[in-house]
Image 1 (cartoon, rainbow, N blue to C red):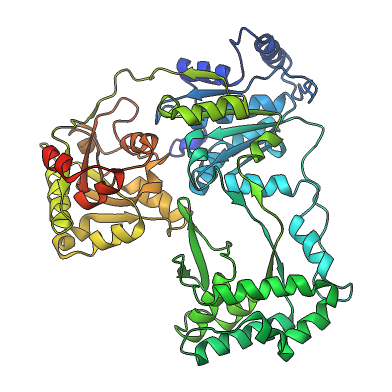
Image 2 (image 1 turned 135 degrees about the vertical axis):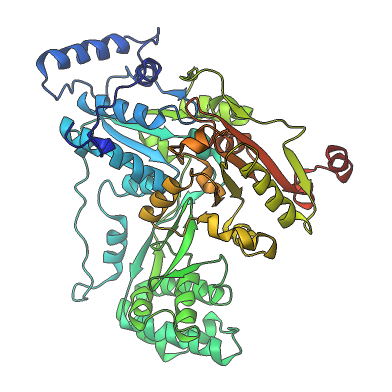
Length: 545
């Protein structure tokens, strides 16, 4: 150990159950496959010779079996994925670890980057979100955006045509490792499309969008322009001259999109920070995403009206955004030779989700790992720990629940409160009922940077601390309880303020406490009107109250 104060300097030794999890991901124990013996022999050879590059597997060999392993929250999913990735990379595979969360993906890769580097497998292991996975897949044979842009630009234009993307060794079979497979089935991914766009910049485009914006402002913030009127302008004719008449149809389609988006650029809601506009994506705010041409005109608005966006930042986003295609999230996993995964809620997947995994992706082998720490000590009583409030009394009732749970032991605990979105969180944090508790309260939302999230998550499990979070932090966030006062007084308490559509999400939020054998407790404070959208009648609510 080089530095006793640095946790990364310590040797991590997996628990026996974690070793079994790793073996099950690798297929060891499958009666229908000889792969387990192959892996064990390979590991024995590796131990004897300490030489890497066991790569003897190819795409023609179907020895790996698609499978999923359920591992309880806080019991080593990250470790299992990292070790399995290392072994498979040593045996000649390209590994893609896909996660729903940018924060968790970066955190896990950084935790095990030294291991990957030491084993020499870093070039073959990629961690990323589902969107990043999609991006890597469609750019395997070259950057699709550069190729589309090159089609429209003439050789003497300033824009570069782009280089071919070398990518990873295509001779190696590819494995997809999914972290929390149930998230893949939510409405953000399954059934939706990834739609990359090529950015096409030219002075003539700026001239045309300036014309549209000036008309919008001069017409009481409402555009009445049509494609016909635009085609009669000098600005339009200049664009056709620059790009060529053969691209006039594409230019017309882009204008139609611009005219539609200029009147609705404020939806979805966006964030302005550091001279950029960002949108919520999972547990983060991404400043590289665009929503059609709504983002472009949001920049115009924030520059010309609110004066919070610079001219340089505005000019950078003035462009035509050419859709390069629509790629189904559901089809992208099929591009891999084998699909595997770990999740904390496998047994709670719905019947249609299980059927889809089985029939569409061949994920028929399931392993359910028992807890490393014995019976869960998370306390929750449905009769006593669910409170239904009216919208008028919600802030007062939630404040009282927080204070009650904070002080229901000999010494103060800590409380984590999860909200459905940032708007509801900020509404509560700014209400008069909660004002006197702001000094002991921290807020964690998607708008924080990676380092800010890390710092706040470390501070959260401290005695007498209240932390307000959005629901995206209810998955994967590891609140490590180092405070003895919290440990010895019942552990952290979690309050959930909304009803989840998927049971798996509720289980994940509940799993932010009572982790790794420690104590914890959980309760809910809900608004009666919000329950009605789940077909819960007022009579049922009154009976519950």
